[in-house]
Length: 99
Image 1 (tube, rainbow, N blue to C red):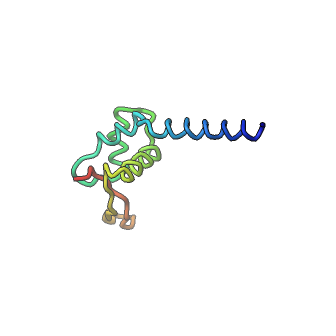
Image 2: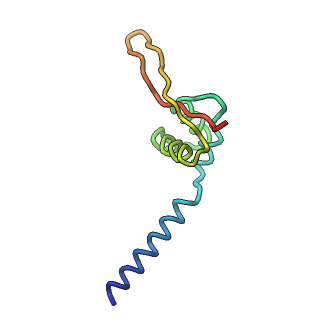
Image 3: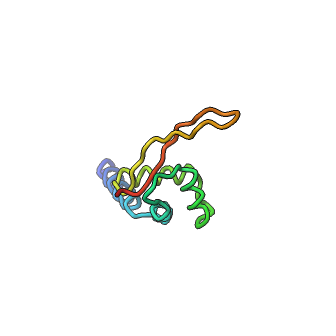
């Protein structure tokens, strides 16, 4: 009887977690709205989102961008930022809306 109770609780918890994950949060919508047809680096997208949502961090924006890529709403590529005086060239990910 206890095992059945635990199984039903676990099943309900999975359903709640799936429902919560499926509902789009506001930050994902803001990140999707910030995307353009041209590739942008994460820092630029995060800066645009931070204007609307003060709680948005680069990590949160990057997570939402990866979710959008998985959902095929956005696409990503690697871009090279040229070297400046005193620093090396860097390779970073850039994102844009799927065309």
